[in-house]
Amino acid sequence: MMDVQSALFYVFSAVMLFAAFRVITARNPVHAALYLVLAFFQASGVWMLLRAEFLSITLVLVYVGAVMVLFLFVVMMLDINMDSIRQGFWKHFPLAATMGAVIALELAAVLLGGFRIREPQVQATAGAVQVSNTKELGVLLYTEYLYPVQIAALILFVALVAAIALTLRTRKDSKYQNPADQVRVKARDRVALVKMDAVKPPVAPAAEEEKSA
Image 1 (cartoon, rainbow, N blue to C red):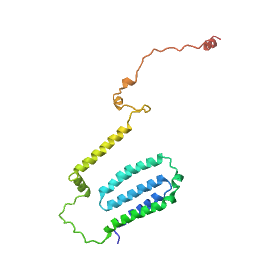
Image 2: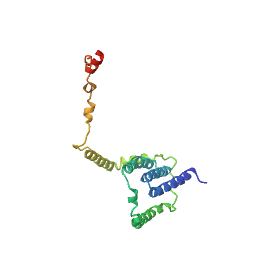
Image 3: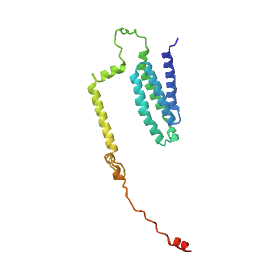
Image 4: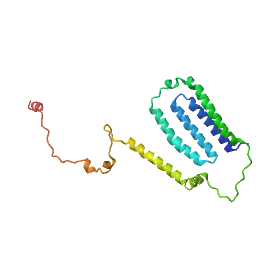
């Protein structure tokens, strides 16, 4: 009898295959990007079933929450001519099919080894401490791989500063506000209350003639 975990695995896998197929067959690029988001969510569910919760939440936060949102913005902002994209499809199809077959064979050579029958692994003792893989990964990153993590963080920080510096270059035709000046603004510097005496408006000559008549 199939348990709940196996049933969820087949459901997630079936939906993921359908979404991946629709990514490459959808005519609308926005629909293709949304199908890719669905495929990412299903892959996240499979990772969760495999007790890899760190990879699961990373897939959702990084790819779905950042990368795919960027893809959707780019696709919706660009005026893509689908007719021009479809031109030359069959011309490049043999090369694309060959590359896809080579990649599929490489993946099969790597992954088929995991489906072979192996000796049963020794079960952990009952007294062993149960630690999540997220905690084990954090301990490993900040102990054995501390310096590589810090170097990678420094490189990303430098890239972030460089991107901001390139974006905020002063241009003559650009208009921007100084945040420091905005913070120092006070109400009395922006609004001036002036007391004026009431003045009766002068009467037009035509109005005077009408009154005299």
